[in-house]
Image (cartoon, rainbow, N blue to C red; front, side, top):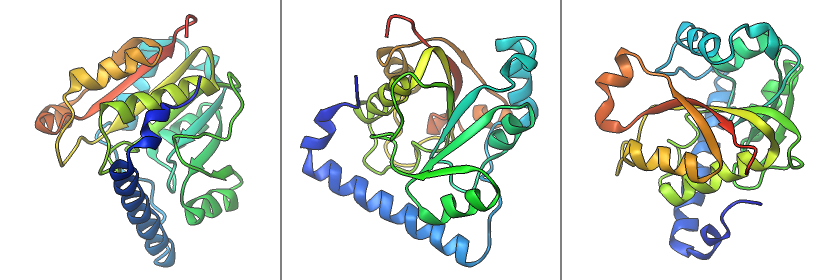
Length: 218
C-alpha cells in the first residue's frame, strides 16, 4: 500500500501543491534567517493533549520508548516537545532543509522529504503526529487527505497511532465529516476527537484534532 497515485496524474493539482511547498520552504528559510525557531502554536494546548492521551492510553508511561514520526515537523511543536518529555523517540520529516538542520542541531533525527512519499519502511513505527500539515496545501482536498493518511498508515505498525491537528482551511474548507471519512477510508479506527473553546470558535474553518489507531485489517 502506498499513497494514492491518482494525485500524480492531475497537473493542475501538482502545480498548486508545488506552489504551496515553495511557499512553505521560503517561509521556513526566512524564519531560520531571522533565528525565529519557536515551535508552532496549536489550537490544542499541552494540557488538552495530556488529558486526551491519558484518556486514550491510560498510563502515559506505556508510551516511553515508542518510536514516532513527526510529519511536517517544521521547527517543532508543543505536542512534539510533550511527547519527547514522556519518553517517545521522534524522527522528523519536513520538506525544508532549514527546519531539519535546526532539529538535528538539537540532537534529533531529521529527514528532508514530503508527506506523500515517506522514506520509512512499512510497519516500522509505533505512531505519527502531524501538526498543521494539511493546512499548508492550497490544492488539498479529500483525496489528498486520504493519500496522506494512507501513507502514514503504511509506515505504522498494526494498532499504531496517529495524532493529527490543524487550524482549519481558510480557502474552501473541507467539511469535518469528509475529513473523518478520509481517516476511516485510510484504515484508521477508534478515533477520539480533541476539542476545546478555540476549535468551537473556529468551527467555520473545519479544524480537526484527533487520535486514531491503525486497524489490524489495513
